[in-house]
Length: 328
Length: 184
Image (cartoon, rainbow over all chains, first blue to last red; front, top):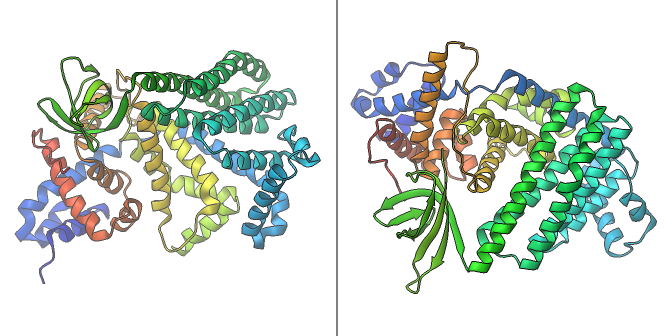
């Protein structure tokens, strides 16, 4: 049976990836050569040109050092687990279950209370982190999770400052990394809220107050903490803290947008612009209508990512009020 | 394959040497895959770094069942790019800055390279989501059809068919055709 064209195309692409010239595969499939050639040339062009997208050597090296530092820090943080190597899976569950029990049944136990104040260089610190994860798992709503993440970010900031006082720079970096992750999670939750508008005004106020207080207080703490830091560690921490700060700003912006969406009864849709026909666009999976009042930020083109705030008309159609385009 | 399995098992036990090898094997490909999908060097660097940190966090849960590790790692990269799009849909990016390889000091060559990359990025951006994904994974990430199929949750036949339509649409987009082969 004759081979399907897409199989021949795939075979030629694999041969090209292995270093073979286009001509050789075309010669093997002369009946398809005319159709194959432009497709193979397009693939070759993408391969060749994208290969020039090389990471900066200094970034490559810094990222590697940072990753390996994380690996080592993680390995050092769990020496007691080695005894349980065979039962690693059971061990994790045992710790998780123990933490759940501690939190839910004997929340005021000495271990939990003591671990709450544990610093990254303390024996009980892994318990503290585990308890936090359990609390997050039981937090329920996204808003409750965001609030907890903000509380934990606050703790990481304190830990960062303490570890900097002690000159434990590896632990400072770990705290900065965790801090960035907490704020990243808040930012992701806020981004979802921005799209759906499903958040109460009270929750927005509460969260933005927490984040604003955090933003007002912590730059000074970090500045002091970093003063004594050796330059080789400093660049990484500064980058992490900048990332944290950016996420924080985004989260506050998103929460405010979410509140406005809610107040104005708007919904949002997002996705790549797939079709633009007259006053109707297909964005992601939704058709939205544009009228003379639609505010368009950026240049709309097929294939661009668009966030569209819409109102639902009486006939069920979506009328775009504002479109924000990711200009690429 | 056995070597990779061994490497991953060592990485799951937090062996720095194993991680270093994984990093060396995949870093450039992940960077390129991310960089072709986002607009700036800073974003590409942040996202690539985050992919490896996420991989470090998740690797204990990776189970070797014959599924390629590359597929697992690129899946993380894919999710990272999607999150990025969600987050950055709010931002007006006014200028592109994506320096390409810096080993060539000739500014004219560098500008030409940047223009080529922009042309390719624009052409890929004109494809459907699935077409973009298959092109990025196969020709930028340099993954096999089988690996691409795993990441996209499709069978190999479907990926080959999608690859065919994607290359057709890409060819039209690169040649400036208005028919960009949208398949909605």
